[in-house]
Amino acid sequence: MPTVEGISAPPRRVRLGLGAVVVLTVAALGMTIGVGVWRSASTPVEHVTGEATPSPVATVAAGRVYVHVDGSVRAPGLYVLPAGARVVDAIAAAGGLTDDAAGAAVNLARVVSDGEQLVVPAEGEAPPPVTVEGGSGAEATVDINAADAAALEELPRIGPALAARIIEWREANGRFESVEDLLAVSGIGDKMLEALRPLVRVG
Image 1 (tube, rainbow, N blue to C red):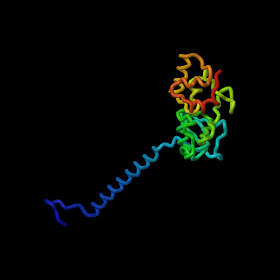
Image 2 (image 1 turned 90 degrees about the vertical axis):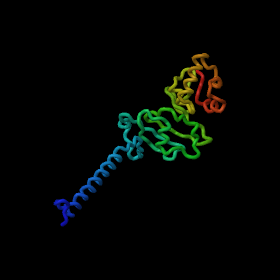
Image 3 (image 1 turned 60 degrees about the vertical axis):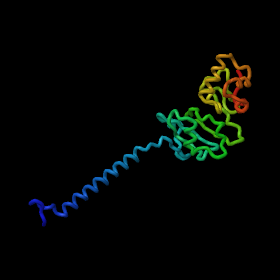
Image 4 (image 1 turned 135 degrees about the vertical axis):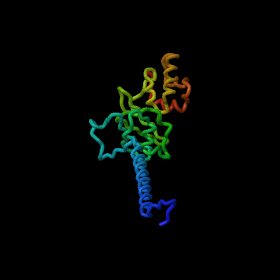
């Protein structure tokens, strides 16, 4: 076997053994990284099937809300969302809006509540009735002279900014004398007023 300056080269079998160890080490490291990435992927939205629906006592878990998304969405059903989720999150969990959905009729910025049924209407359909404390169904309306920002944001197409402007107008000008007075609020036009008319009242 040839030598270099009196030192014999390591046997071929030893060199092959070291190479195999390096390959196995690199492969194991790659597998470890892959498993870590997979485990770190979070899925905060959970779709609950009808058969697996928990009892009412067990529905509310810490930091989660149950929302029934229905209407013009691609995957209607019961979804578990993080507390503080908004309507846009619930619709995204249900696969997004269908092509015929009237997305403008839904307040995407509103925070959803536990046990809520969120119905997205189709184009041409009337918006679903807004339920407020002290009323239910189609008879429930919002008193625009008494409602706070949270109650106003329950109405379709009214987000935090527009709700604040309604309250600011009320504080600056006194009570609304009629529903039509909402036209004086910046951001509310004839079309929005017609959508709000069956949902609000002057108390």
